[in-house]
Amino acid sequence: MTKLTCWIMLFMTTILWAVDEGGAVIATPKVTRGDIASILTERQIAYSERGDKSLEFNVTGTNGNYIVSIVVDPDNSFLYLNIANLMVVSPTDKKADSIMPALMDLNYRSGIIKYEWNRKAGEVRASFVFYTKSRFSKTAFITALSELVESVDAAYPSLMSLGTSAG
Amino acid sequence: MRYGWGILLYGVLLWGTVQYSHAESQEPTNTAGDNAATTAPSGEKKTGIALVQSHFERLREVGFNYTHPRPEEFDFTIGNDQRTFPAAVTVNEESNTVYMTAVIGKLVADSNKLGTISAELMAENYAANWTKVEWDKTTGNVRVSCVFIADDDLPFDEFSFIMDQMLTSAIIAQDILNKNR
Image 1 (cartoon, chains in turn yellow, green):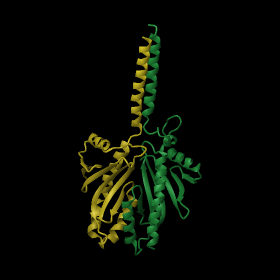
Image 2 (image 1 turned 135 degrees about the vertical axis):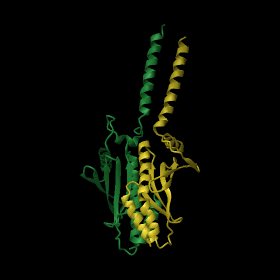
Image 3 (image 1 turned 180 degrees about the vertical axis):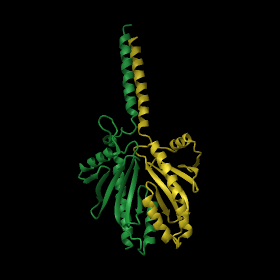
Image 4 (image 1 turned 90 degrees about the vertical axis):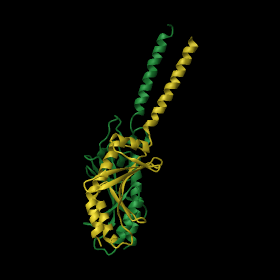
């Protein structure tokens, strides 16, 4: 009876320690595409998957319609939120000389959102990057997502006028 | 019955130990060693300004200087052996944002290379993951910036990582300015 009791105690201790070790993993998670998909689902945002790392969804703003893309890279500890293809500016286009300074000034005034230019494709996009190595806040993610859409929607009319009136 | 009380005591102790360990493991971000400085010993979260100040104090211990001219502003310098840049961190506790900026030079609006330089800086914005290069056309200041949304925490490792990234970007952006002068 004594031996049996000891074995039961040892067994229970081992099982409970093992369960608890499993719980500790939660404290230092990697943010996965599944995590982001869950947040979007919670907020009733219909998204689609693109490739291995991205999620996309459509947003209708006051001034235009946008495709929001979220690239999730757990291995490099970042989330890249962006709205691509806002406009296309070829490096050889004469309008580039007046559009680029305007975009640089927009960057100064656009708070947390960055406007960037892919010289090769000519594409202008807006973005925000999260560093997720040591933490991830759902609230901060939602804030950044909202800021991205609001910033682009506010800037969209002037971006469009740059494309047509510049040069 | 001889072992009844012993087993009961064992059960209670085991349950208590597991509950305590489990509660510790649920602390959201303060389990990693690098993050320990972001939380007061009492476990109470620091506000944005106090948090940033604790990071600067930690850096001061290794010879990094900063000034604190206003409660929400911290001024310092980033650089290497060749060049330095005046930098600042501004904390907005209402929006839970922490802005880090470094001024890298001037670009006047009537420069005949305005388009060329801006294009190169916009391409650098595409290449850089963590930082943004921006231009204030009113003052002509070109600066590198980065923003944190610090609603729950701002770990020291993230703060120092971004400082390093700021320096890298500042050097690249200043090279673009200089080569087009």
